[in-house]
Image (cartoon, rainbow, N blue to C red; front, side, top):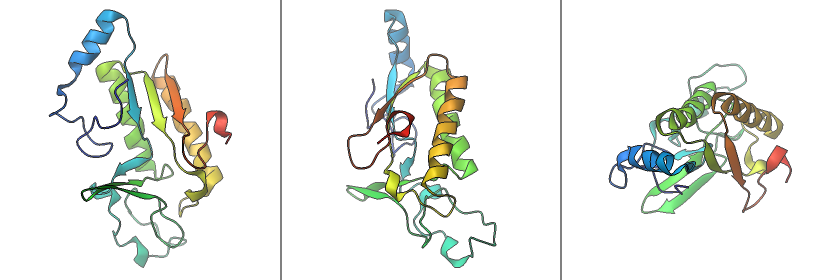
Length: 180
């Protein structure tokens, strides 16, 4: 398993300083040895500096109930605040993204599928989200659970032998089949 920190920015592209050849060399070696390559990911997190995760994008000026706005991917509460923001020091941090945003849903799904297509990665350790915070403008906790379940189903269809370990080490995180 390649653990947390493989990216340039949180859940961004592969860090070329750490992996000058992406995961190509590691993937070739694991294949040669008959070992499955694994990767840590946070499918609902994105670097706070990413353009689609900025804390202020003007969404607060609109009526979410009657206007269809092209907001960013940030998961925000009914009072437009980010549901989870995690500063990690030195001006860095990440925010929770909203799987109910179709553009983000496709982004993370395609990112994971591309890791399989490009490097053969079919083993993942997913950091999971805090259940109690996902009551957003786009859906309540139950709707988010179903979107996450849908994502897992689509990934399983696209990636043969997919195995996901769910990290439930802090707070109110769901584990297998969303039990607490």
